[in-house]
Length: 133
Image (cartoon, rainbow, N blue to C red):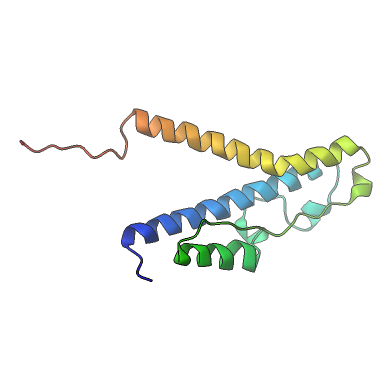
């Protein structure tokens, strides 16, 4: 298993993206529950973007790194955000807490697409020949 420097850079980039995505995803659940009055995620220190609060050793570290070294698609998971359903009496509140995590992933995807489009539009990262060929 001989990884090129380009594969290592892509792997590290993918790993960082997974950690950021999982942190935002779990923050989405925690922040929405907190907004609706359930202080359980706040008391557990989960209303934060800090990846350390969300890392699961197997799902956030081991499996993604294994996938990188074996050159498989990177998948992973984080620690779940616990809520107290008694603090969210309305079904709609629990539904919003549930969809807030994937909603954060969608928001990140849209932001990445916009950033990628802007970078492509303005030629950032595009190789240009400045020689007198």
